[in-house]
Amino acid sequence: MKIGTPREVFGGEARVGMTPSVAKHLQKLGYECAIEIGAGQAAGFSDADYEAAGVEIIATAAALWKASDIIAKVRQPNVTETKRLNKNKTLISFFNPAGNEEGMEIAKSKGANVIAMEMVPRISRAQKMDALSSMANIAGYRAVIEAGNNFGRFFTGQITAAGKVPPAKVLVIGAGVAGLAAIGTSTSLGAITYAFDVRPEVAEQVESMGAEFVYLDFEEEQQDGAATGGYAAVSSPEFREAQLAKFRELAPEIDIVITTALIPNREAPELWTEDMVASMKTGSVIVDLAAEKGGNCKLTVADEKIVTENGVTIIGYTDFPSRMANQSSELYASNIRHMLTDLTPEKDGQVVHDMEDDVIRGATVTYQGEITFPPPPPKIA
Ligand code: NAD
Image 1 (cartoon, rainbow, N blue to C red):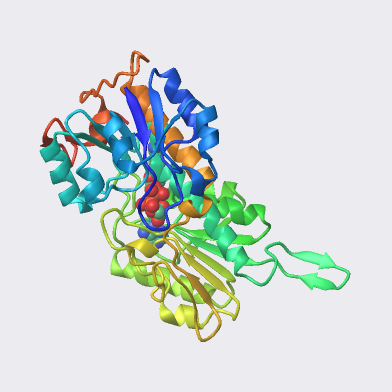
Image 2: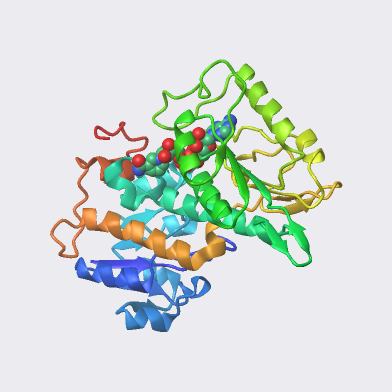
């Protein structure tokens, strides 16, 4: 069978679903590999790199989709792309099934099998295919780099001949995958780093990375939504008030705020209010990684960088992984390669779409003319 990767058509997307090094692994699984001409260019992979890795270069998107049994790509396909599927094709891609009814209906009517990368169950066995985590890791790192690029001072404290420089103070709100990556990057640059999460179990991880966990003066357990499989739930009004009071106290001292707080299937909670922004020092920076879901900061504008009247820069970019497209593509393509390894038990270049396998079943959103989303909960942990 042939695995083909088209050029991403979503505006500004620089990632690519197959890299030359991953293509070599896919060939070891028995597949032929192809890309649309120039598909890896924006991510720093030339057609010559692919050719050297044994990948066929196909001149147009239409020809690439037609020639491929399996299409491996990054972004949710648009309608034109989805209509190129048929019953002999499997698509592996982000697909946004919860918000892409139309795409699922088209894929179903075409009889195509679709594996949605954001649906890979978050269980130990599937970590190697967990594209949400690999992309969140990059976003967390890049958020700190972006903050530094917009911050006029050092992260680390220094004693120089010209005088003493205090270290920057960084607050990371939300210590999931992206937040922990941001904490690691911030502490390694030498900033004094604080972190907060509604899940108290992350305090130890935060502290082991050299950051200080922010505890609330609150009688209940710090978490009021632990029963959600490791994810956060909506906070009670009292908890939220205690949280906001703590942030209000910290705001005038903090130089950089990285917000990553998300609750599955909801708008992001608003945690950094207008008055907190107003009380921050001129030159401070906020990077809101929740911008795509409405933002954790009241003033965030998705996909933009704004500067407030009091000189606080607020960054609401939603494309952090694409801003590091070479690294992101390598990790994302590896996630897909691991998915294909499980889909190819005989290493003979033939997909065995085993719907009894929890991971494959969980990620499959259309199969043999049926919509199979949402999946049943996984049986294993
Ligand atoms: P996420 O992107 O859904 O949320 C980011 C963080 O925001 C979470 O830590 C959440 O607790 C926090 N948050 C939500 N509301 C908040 C609030 N009001 N104030 C402060 N923080 C708030 O999370 P994620 O990065 O996808 O990870 C969620 C969980 O899943 C973590 O426990 C993670 O370790 C786990 N996980 C497990 C696996 C696996 O086992 N394969 C893979 C990835 C993640």
